[in-house]
Image 1 (cartoon, rainbow, N blue to C red):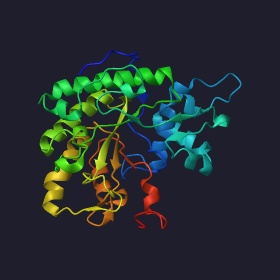
Image 2 (cartoon, rainbow, N blue to C red; image 1 turned 30 degrees about the vertical axis):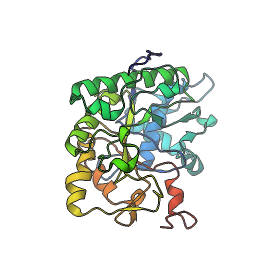
Image 3 (cartoon, rainbow, N blue to C red; image 1 turned 60 degrees about the horizontal axis):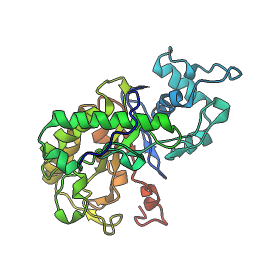
Length: 313
C-alpha cells in the first residue's frame, strides 16, 4: 500500500566507519578485536557523526580537534574520548542522550523504527510489510525501498534533530519458523536464504552502500531464536547445533558480512537456557562484519539480567 510522500531530506552523510548506538535503557557492547573499534570508540564515532546535526561550535567555544572534519577519524575519536568523563560516557549509553554543554554537544537520541517506512513519525511513504516485500523475490527493488526509507529518515532528522535518530532498528531477520508468533508480518520468510538476501538488500539501501559515509545506521533484529511473545524474557529457544548453524544464524550473517548492518539487537528470550543478551554467539557474529558492529540490547533487557529481574542471570 502506498502512502503519500513526506519531507525528503538530502542524503547527507555520517563520516564514520559505520557504527550505531544503543537502545533505550540499555548499554551497547563494542566490537571484537583487531581494527574494529571498541565500545568507547563506537560511542565517540556516534557523537562525532551527530555533530553535523548539532551545529558548529560557537565563536567563543574552544576549537576542539574532534570538531575538525579535516582530521582523521581516529584522531577525532581519541580527542573526544579523552575529554569525556566516565559519568558522561555512561550517560551516553542510553537511547536519549543528554547534552554535554561544556563540549558543545547537544542532546540527541538513537533508534528509529523503520521496518517498512517511517510514517509513525509523520507524513511519509508507507511500503508493504516486510513479508510483502520479500514476496516480490526482488532484492534490487527491496534495496530501492530501503534507500527511499533512508532518505525519509534523513528528512525527519533534519526537521527535528533532537526527536528522531539516524540509527534505525530494522530490518527484522528472524526466520518465521512458527505462525503462532503473532508478529510474522515483520519478517521476510521462513527460509533463511531468502531472509538473508532481503535483509542485505534493505540494509544496503538504508546505509547508502558507501563504506565510509552512512545514510542511516541499521540494526538487525532480534538475535536469536525470537519467535515468542508470552513470557518472552523467561522462555528458552532450545536450538540444536544444526538448527542454530543451518537455520537461525544464516538469516543474520549475509547482511553482516556485506556491511549492510551497523548493529545487531539481541532478543529478550533465552537460547539454550542462557539469556540472548549475553549469548557468546554475538561475539562470533561481530567477527564477521567488515565494519564496526554494535550489540544493541532490546529495551529493558539489561534489567532482566539483574538479581531483581526476571532472568536473575
